[in-house]
Length: 124
Image 1 (tube, rainbow, N blue to C red):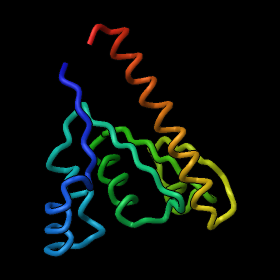
Image 2: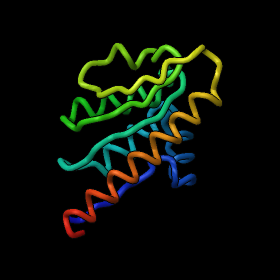
Image 3: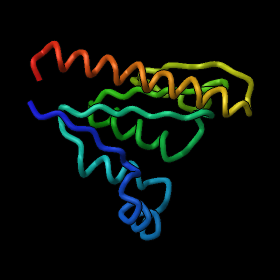
């Protein structure tokens, strides 16, 4: 099995072109729709949980039957109301971005360590 990860915002030229031609709020969703398949997984990080582009991405994943995970901060925002989304909430006072970003960074390190261990255990 080929395993890859794609950051939907890493191709700045593509992201900018879609944002200019369509709308900033649909750019991640549009890129996701062209790259996703039945083995895809969506993972997002949002301090507020209110970013329209991230909400739309999770809705698109849910509609496609693709699992998604949202790492959130503050009070979880609008994403908390969405169904079929796995959520990790690092509850904090609204506006403490640094605190939430540090917790998200720690979560990223933990997830990568788990993935590397899983791939190593499965002979990849």
